Amino acid sequence: MQKTAIIPINESSAGIASILKQEFHAETLSRTEVGDHWNHFDAFIFIGAMGICVRTIAPYIDDKHHDPAVVCVDSTGHYAVSVLSGHVGGGNELARTVAAAIGAESVVTTQSDNTGLWPLDTLGGKWGWHTLFEGSSNLLISKFVNKEPTALLLDIRDKGTDYLERTLPSHVTLIDTCAQLENGHFSAAIIVSPFLYELPKHLSAVRYIPQVLDLGIGLAHQAPLSSYEDIKGHLAQHHISIASQAIRNICTIDIKAEEPIVKEMLKEAPGSRLVLFSSEELNGVEVPTPSTTVAKHVGTSSVCEAAALLASNHGKLVLSKEKGKDYTLAVAIERNYLREGHIEIVGAGPGDPDLVSVRGRQMLEKADLILYAGSLVPRELTRCAKQGAMVRSSASMALEEQCTLMKDFYDRGKFIVRLHTGDPCIFGAIQEQMAFFDQHGMSYHITPGISSFLAAAAELRSQFTIPERCQTIILTRGEGRTPMPEREKLHLLARSQSTMCIFLSASIVDDVQRELLMEYPADTPVAACYHLTWPDQRIYRGKLSELSKIVHDNHLTLTTMIVVGEAIDNRAGLSELYSKHFTHLFRKSIDEKP
Image (tube, rainbow, N blue to C red; front, side, top):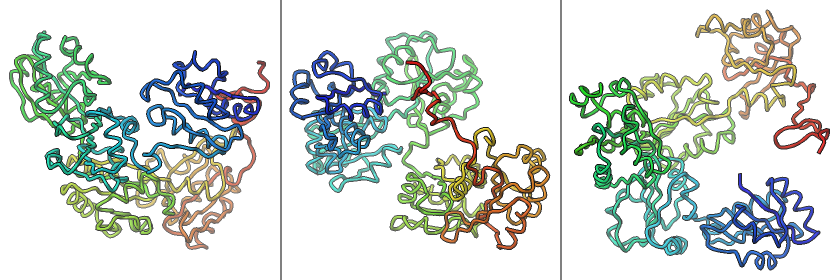
């Protein structure tokens, strides 16, 4: 947590100071104490006149890489001004946070913030990349904010590169290779890559180095430390530096853990982890260049390649085995980071397009193919697709047809969204698709969504967990064409009389009611929720003994959520969380003695 000091300049600042002290868990200092504590705090918040703030801090200012953040709030609480270390120290963000806490307006004067441009000096930290400026950082930033032609080279794909592509300024051009920097068109370059490519001398550049490489190493017994320089030179030929913070894991066989070269590598590779594998684990990995000699000595036909592949979750070798006198090297990267084909399984939410997650919408906007569950997901959710994207409903497709379509786009390096209703991991039928992706070594990820049981709670205006009455929610379905495991029959689950949310069961409601009545009282509240959050949403409340009649009389079929339990419409039973008599980490009970 950021260590913050509050400096109230006069008595009229006391009210604001009290709020900020509580909000930021801050300490209060007088103006005369600032100098003694300048290097002990991450941030200082002055409350009072700007001139007094500036004169107080002036003797202690060093540079933006060492100064703490300073924000000044006027004594009336109308403005929160970022004064010092806006980017690197976080002063700009602090000003916004302070303003929000007291209902003020934040004032930020940094040009990149006010023009909506990327803050190049702090951009890497936001996405977990190491930042390395080639030449003067101020010169590069000046060129960038003045909108001189800038090249952007992206070697990987992660959340940060997705953000850069989504927010690409008009004066920035996305390029594919460093060779495109040679034509003299660009005066600045931004490179996101674990590789240290050679750049033209005239070019102002910043490298953002993601820690995504897994280095596998095999060593002769007690390989001399002098070989370490040879290893570094070998890697440098492939634009890899151990000291660049690009290496996530240094991997080898467990019997080499104490080798001097391994220890030296760990000293020089900030943030890298040592990952050790047994010979049995390594021997189970298929590699391009196995060795019978290695197998004879350590019980596995590969160390460096197998270790790198295991550490990267069976990713891709970007450097196959290379041999030195006393060592072998290989480097791999997880497939999720590759700028190749990718499938994002996205949860669409319960139906209302506004309820898809921010990330889910971003995925839909960048997709080359959107394959959506047309029988359950409104087509309106796909209206944000980019020009030229293919949008198809899977309602009439068998699994094989869906997979063939997705693989066709994947093999062409395209970005695919498989859009499922609610949250894809709850009755989403994604397991068979993931099995196909795994079989073909395809990169995929899941973006969660709001499940319909959560929408039911919201639309019923009910808290599904009631203190001391009901602390469990059961998500299940009735037994229709898909058999239920014997231990999960509805009447067995009903014994706890928890809040039960029953999916996909309106067509077998008679059986559902019969089983529930074996354990729940007949007057237990129920709700049948049809098309939750859709424009034609309908919700019917009643008692469990009336459930079947409610469903049949209102012709409820697909996309109906059945909720059972005393939590529906319950307003009895209060949580202690906000009681003034309850102590927790952030607040003491009024009954406790000081």
